[in-house]
Length: 202
Image (cartoon, rainbow, N blue to C red):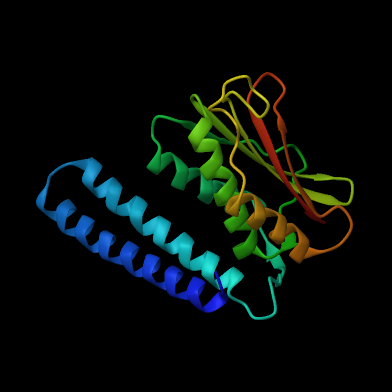
């Protein structure tokens, strides 16, 4: 598919998500059911994430980071709260190591997109728990997302963690920050589950 055709498809999908959100808004107003409001909120979040993907991948000059002083704990708290609201059956924790940086230099918009993609994957496979961390490892700032699911490499055929757009986005975010140690990894978590790490130059 050429870029023009892809742009038309993407534009159509974005419009369809907007129309679906509007219908869910009407349903949420008519039906006294928390599930209706949750469906509306989930659709809105998906549309907003989709728009962010478009902003990232639609740039003529490729993905570029614009770092500034940020608070990793604040970002993780926000992500954990949003995940807990959307998935109340899961326990979502922020586990900041002692000495975690109060501030770090990175592009918060891009890092948030990457962590949202990792969380989306974790939610799919977690049995009941998701953990988030931010810490320094030498000259690297590490964002970690863990879950207690079957983990990558499990014999369960339904347990293979997703690849594709989410993984490509995370890798692009790491590359955009440049520097030594910028990378993404997904490995089994000690004790069971999966461990995703986004590593950026500190």
